[in-house]
Image (tube, rainbow, N blue to C red; front, side):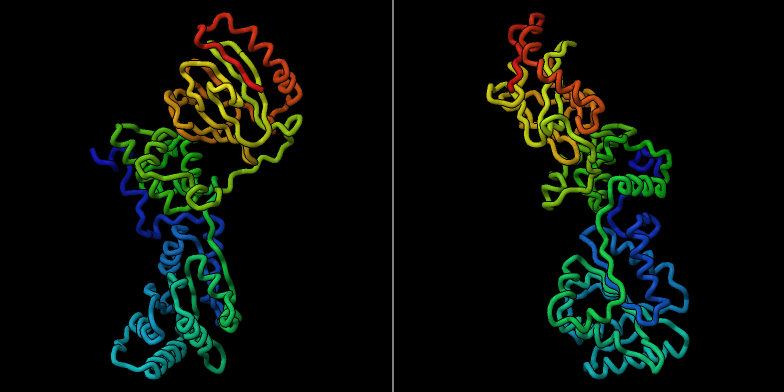
Length: 425
């Protein structure tokens, strides 16, 4: 059985090559396309589209081109590390000329005559320059000059520049003010948000033949977003790898463990660690507990509640060393077993290369953003997480925290001697 048959797919859903049939129209992609379409009906259309690597610029351009009417003539220049003369030659080649032995003046004359001829025939001409961040300043000056070609009524060349964020910096730099004044619209494509990313994945799966929306478990989407930041190309890479791993393991649905196995295969870090930025998670916008405490952990063992502690935002260390914030004297717990990091979006738990690891829902993990009520297993002990910012009974949880040390010292008679638990202040 093949990879596609196993998951009831008719084609690969996460190929990296741009394919307009798979395009997902997020709100910002739809707006960027509308800006490009405006170049057709605006006689002086000059649009700049920027976006990070893998944000979908090329796919967007291809989708735009497939929908152009017959009265539109276009040229696409993607090789942009050119001299001014080579740049003019590249444009004319796209329009069907063979300008190899011509000088610059002849090239300009050929292009000017072509544009006037197309205008007289009722045609609209669009020049699209991809990877425009690589254009030299002298070539950008040629772009400015071309944007000024006009008849006695209107300009005859529409221009779309697409490139990475460096293009914006280059256009805004001193000396290019005249070019900037010609630009009518600008738009920057950012990563997808968490909801859009899930819709993007489900859309591509549906186009590829799978429509039940159950191939990826809900928590798997959280892990995908954490490691891709919503960048479409990274999402494609991770999802394709995860499907291959799940296929090799004979699984019909993908969970967090499959995503994390794929992360290990790829050798990735979280998106924030790779880029110095964080994905745009929903920010918690509710009141914290007393003294600014935002997270609470109830420690349990063998069904008994041993203690309850709460902490402000920041770093909390769990382990069997007495100096840890949560001190557990147990042979199953490493000296520094894990860290709990409270931030504006909740809490992240990360294994500190412990011997026995951790489980949530009986699944091992290395790093994970917690949901309210998650139970972290460390040997025979459990830590139950409560987000105090979403709790409706903050006062009660604080009272429980204040009595926790006494409860911990008096409720461990049924524990194995080697499993005595002490919770530090």
